[in-house]
Image (cartoon, rainbow, N blue to C red; front, side, top):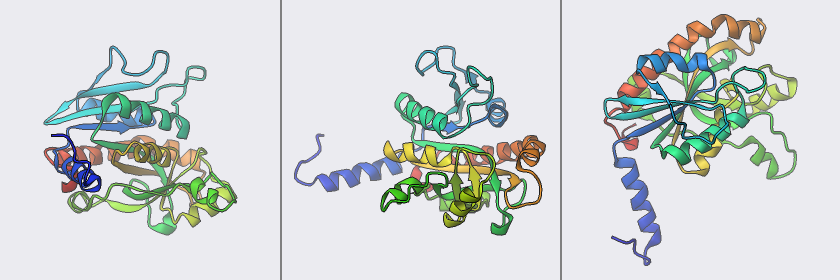
Length: 265
């Protein structure tokens, strides 16, 4: 039946309501590092694309398969073609999120990965957080309204039932393109009231919001930003163990999502 022109606002609300009530079918995970992605690829026996859904020449990798009633897609931005390292950061995250939504039309985006945490806000190594809100901390534009655009604060999908079932910590996520934290970044992170810090989340949130796909952010803490150990040293030391904790949490997340609608989360 064609939508009525008489009450477009009612029709729009009805469409959103129907989407929220349909069982979730297709999930796209955006995961920045291969080390973070492979445990889930192996757990759910996902296969790498033989013929990519992405433009020719890009390094982006899609692993996909089915678990129960869910079509799971893990998108990893791949290795930098010149330097051979994981293509971390906001630019790669934005591009693969945009391309994945266009190609796969997911019901839900999940940005899963490791992050830094702030002990002053209750974060500990190995904790896994759900982000309540996401924002940038390194886009400083001190002009009225542009300053708000730079911060880019966005809400994650509200998941009260999921939080109750899996019992994860919750906190605000702040995103920037540097692993270390400059004094300027630190001031912006404090202003964002962030508990966790990463290099992709707010970029994923921007694209997901632009294309109206709900998004969830799951972050496991590898390093304490306001601690006494060098970030790089702590990150590398804890990466394998914390990635295993992330894998276990995401597995529980998928079990919970299976058979449910967005409104059930």
